Length: 197
Image (cartoon, rainbow, N blue to C red; front, side, top):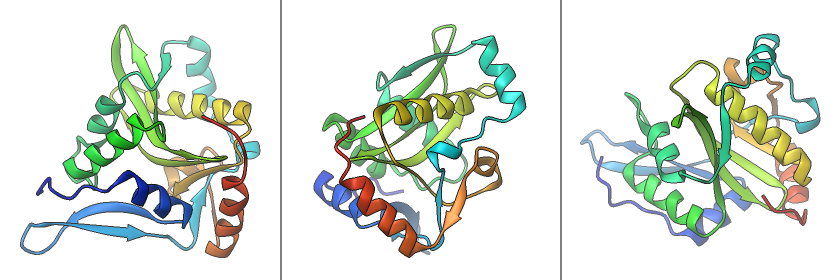
């Protein structure tokens, strides 16, 4: 993909507050293009209804992973992009790294024996966290990161965890789909919450 398409931090933040998020793709000629998305229905994980699957509870008890936040954000987004097909172009990576440097984008990381083996990243505005992507190089590593993210958000007083879409992987944690009107109402409330990541 052509790495030239980058998004200014202000534009990204405005988009999230309007219920939009970007994804990179290629047109028929292989040239990078940028799309803005607002799924209807929208995937969210109600924080008070977050469910930890039984098998994952066992993994958490083992305590194999050390959890860190925001220590290697560029590595997390790079590993999230490291797959056969990805919407996380080099331009998208650069845009979110700048957003991270401004304090708006965050990573939750699972480490095993000093190696980064799983994690996720997303954007935090007010009491809303917009989950973007996750990766796992070891069993349950990204799931453990998600559990720690949810605990952190609840502790901080967040009210909205946006997953963009729902899928079977997220449904095991309690992810549901809500109509766009409901999502926008919940987003408006979340943006007014005076909390920090």
